[in-house]
Image (cartoon, rainbow, N blue to C red):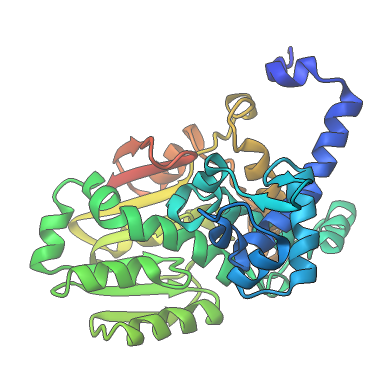
Length: 357
């Protein structure tokens, strides 16, 4: 078996140079995450060349820390520095991908995931040596970090782009149906749908009590009366023919027992019901992923979160790279005989499966 050729830029780059660049970028991404969380990139967006003090004032932050952060951004080629005036400016090309106006394409929003995973480094090393897994409590920033990721997508695309992938479901939601979201996290998808479709009733389940608390708080703040959120083991839904529409958004690959979850979703649907499974679009075959731009990110997150959390619950450790034939097999095994797969260009690295019994 021959290994695929590395990407062209990697073939040209000497191994020592590539590793130095990789390590530098790895450190730099931590400060990109801080720039995102503190609003520094948004403060810089559109500012004329400014001093560190001026930027700190605009962002409402401590000047000494901002000055050191700017040094890293300038050396990393993200922010431009004029040594004659000691001023800094964020080029528009970087602002396009590092500020909140970039929406779901905001690359800086991914950076905090690195810090979250770094916090469990010692636990993962022990898993490599002895097996086992981790617990959700090992990731205290998980709900906040994942909520931000999903929020950007749902606010922009859930109503106008994602739901229309399911033929006829928007009209049914308008008329009023029962909807279940499994692994709902902080519940933003449900709350967005519930606000848009007041005649429908929405139920969300998640294992994490912190996620359910956040979902309920947002629903209450929005004044919604058609949502219910419950903390429960999603491997045992306990419903038969109770819902017309079911969804999962990037949650199946995290499940300890994904087969049981999928089978439970199938049983929960009424005749004519439909299930939308949105999940990571990385193939179960490594060779299909080699040249995908976000594949290293996906395998790293899978190694340090998705797989060990599942294994820590005694599960099968499906991992993020589960799509392709394996996803279709699992959906068929659960009872879905009619599955249509969508790979929309506006959500790179994700597949949307529309599933009917």
